[in-house]
Image (cartoon, rainbow, N blue to C red):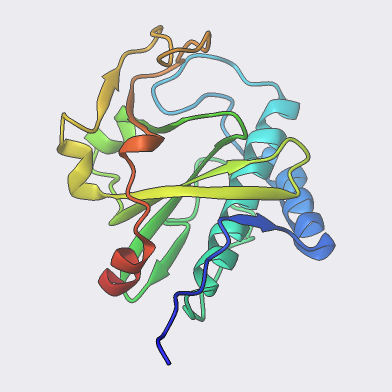
Length: 195
């Protein structure tokens, strides 16, 4: 009898408890967040900071639950509220590999990394791209990239503040390293072996 692969679910739904924890975190954390993104000048109102923070935390839960399908255990998420100007060092760590979860709205096709963070050496071993549905109660894991792929000009597009995200009307508020989701790696077995 031959072995057959189990199909992993890329679309992950939060439990009501997970959703409530993310929402509570976003409301509390938004009060200590910067109004500006790294390298940006757009002054974000508190409701937008809350929304961005909730999307990011939901994406972390989605990524954790997704990776647990591969029997990766012990992923710890940080729900601590930090003082203004301080934040957690990484979204999570697996076997000493630092992983950053990058979130976007459900229709987005681009993983965006603020160039200012990358240029100052704030680079993780892996970036996982997750799009979050409109109600913040589910998300889809799209793919991942390694830190060395950020320097690959064939995969990474460098966009300046004021540029449009390609094929959209969205104007960037800061310089970004951008990777189109088709250029992300979706061979999760490879990532799991590397972890």
